[in-house]
Length: 152
Image (cartoon, rainbow, N blue to C red; front, side):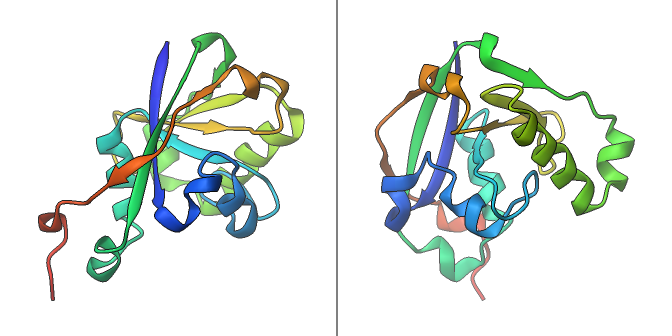
């Protein structure tokens, strides 16, 4: 079994595993209009992945975290060289993710983290039939350590 983590603002806890945010705004691995749930291989990586998008004021907001568990059999992965990852344009990542969603290849796609090169994120396709095989756990309150961002 693989366990992954996700963090979101408390205001969105009821849709933490729906892909609504990525649908409305797009993300690194998907264009706007495609539902994807972004998760990380650990809570600490999920923290880093979120912190790159926040400033010190936002860290004081209310957040929640949740875990999900699944079998490796419903995961596909892509093998990308570090050179490609460092030189790829944002649109190239979206092409890969959008193709994965369109082809409905798997419920989960393992992709390299850009923030922590030796770790992985797991993208969920909530429209895939095997999405029901993912166990989604309840949310819990999450607080960032204020030392993670310097206060101005």
